[in-house]
Image (cartoon, rainbow, N blue to C red; front, side, top):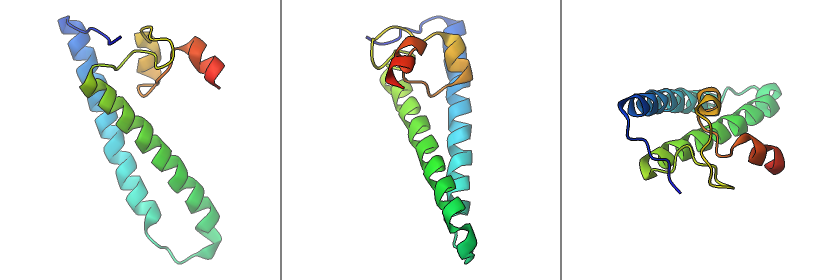
Length: 106
């Protein structure tokens, strides 16, 4: 089941979210590049590794959301197939699940 967005308002909303996700993807890519630069400080290695892992996860989530937009599946819960409320997507644009399914998924 794909989300049908035909109205002008819906298209503008989706375009704005796509822009937000693309901007965040670019920012996270820059952050990852900076984090992977070798500072030579072994004391920062553990912290840097954690930040790199978190940044990679964020990039994967954003990339998945952008792919769902391109494929027409954005805004549809990956578990139950219902529409994810726009309010949830405003807060968490890369959300894959509706709130009830997210709570079950953990």
